[in-house]
Amino acid sequence: MKIGIVGLGLMGGSFALDIKSVYPSSKIYGSDISKKNQERAIELELIDEVIDIREFHKMDVILVSIPVDKSISVISKILDKINNKTLVFDVGSTKGAICESLNNHPNRGNFLASHPMAGTEFSGPDAAIKGLYINKTNIICEIDKTDIKIRTKALEIFKLLNMNIIYMDSRPHDVHVAYVSHLSHISSFMLGKTVIEKEKNEKNIFDLAGSGFESTVRLAKSSPETWTPIFLENKKNIVLAIEEYVSNLKILKKIIEENDETSLSYILNNTNRIKEILKNTIHENGK
Amino acid sequence: MKIGIVGLGLMGGSFALDIKSVYPSSKIYGSDISKKNQERAIELELIDEVIDIREFHKMDVILVSIPVDKSISVISKILDKINNKTLVFDVGSTKGAICESLNNHPNRGNFLASHPMAGTEFSGPDAAIKGLYINKTNIICEIDKTDIKIRTKALEIFKLLNMNIIYMDSRPHDVHVAYVSHLSHISSFMLGKTVIEKEKNEKNIFDLAGSGFESTVRLAKSSPETWTPIFLENKKNIVLAIEEYVSNLKILKKIIEENDETSLSYILNNTNRIKEILKNTIHENGK
Image 1 (spheres, rainbow over the protein chains, first blue to last red):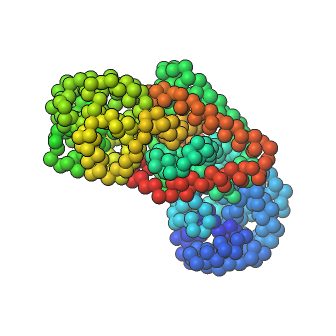
Image 2 (cartoon, chains in turn orange, yellow; image 1 turned 90 degrees about the horizontal axis):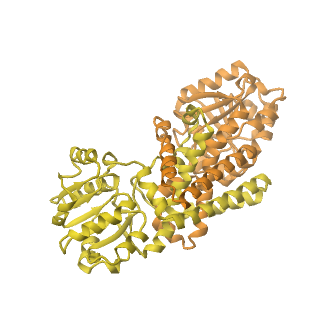
Image 3 (cartoon, chains in turn brown, yellow; image 1 turned 120 degrees about the vertical axis):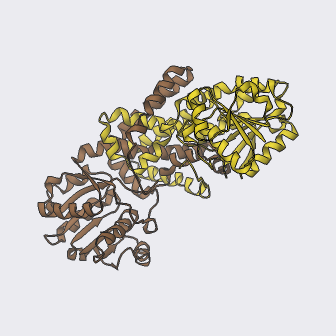
């Protein structure tokens, strides 16, 4: 099987490792807008060969793993040139715009819109890790627009990676991830910003950082190249999520100001339920 | 050496394990307001014996590891009854009120105000883990108010636990931890609350939670019994920290609403510095 990967960062590089482990005889071709990343992907043996996107029509499977603002035009160009059996899929964190823009593409049936709930705060080919996709949830959007044979091929791959498949329309997907994923990144980035601004002496942050601060601020280490376009593309939902988050912070502030121990304790106890909700979630990477 | 521990939860229970590992011949006595916790601490072999606080005057070292709103009166009562060689110390997350209230205690010299930057989101005796204190930062406040011999005893213990000691006045301590520790807990609790409110179907949260959400929301699993009094006791600093955090969230929201890619990318890149700041922080537990 010939696998083409456009974008050799954390997501593309890790996919290369995982697909190789389930299809050892597959040959992996890659391409990245950064020549340095391409060379590094070869050095790290993530891919077997660098090839130009224009040659991607020779592939059986193509993964597009680049920032979401670049995906639409790149996927569209790839779909123009593929053979009729090629599966093209993406791993972007927003799905509404991409699905809408590809709606009328003559080869829409060769594309599968997917969003694996997998990642770490690191980026680039050196961030690639084996097992990133294994056992993770993969959200597939608008499955009915993907040809049956192409779907089957994709599901076969995801099954071998032991992924838990969830089907969702692209618009509700973007609403849910605004809360469960994007807001986490925003709360973490703004926590980092607030603390850096306050602690002019950075040695203080280092000295005082317990494991609590470290895990809450972990996502603030994430790649701005990945997250700037995600925040802008999912603007409408993210703005609402921030508003609700700010409203909760203001309520809490007022309760603290008023020494309202009963309400404070009630809110913390009620939010503790997240423990039960997440109880059986297992993430082997990115923690 | 006779060690007394008042409060047999995560902090007290873990201290029992760690002190036993560096002073294997020490005998550990414990007490908890919850009889169930006391029994469990014996079952788990965290302590050798349950004794009443009133007998704590026989101890060489006493750790008070109970919620901060209870600490002041308990420490004061213990200081009333100890022998003149006993070291009493606490591990509370706020230090201003406790130091102020004990200022005029005749045995103030036997007390050392400390705050180890160590913990996990779990609580109770079952949450006790070996190594929680090892290699962690320990903030000591107002050291000059502790008698030299008592100080020496404390520093010997902390040295054996390989703790990194930082000295700070209690008021600046409360300001710094409001940002580097308490705000993390607030941002995490409010993230959990916002997501739970939005996702009426909790299965959605479970399915969509990637490792990013999990680590950002981890602190929302923390004990309300511990954190309610911390938030109230450090009210002044925490209210300011929330205001600065909310202000940053609003700035970010406006930038996203205005599609201001340059400012958004600038902020994310600038906050990425947290990666360098925290680079060499090692936390072996609680991650």
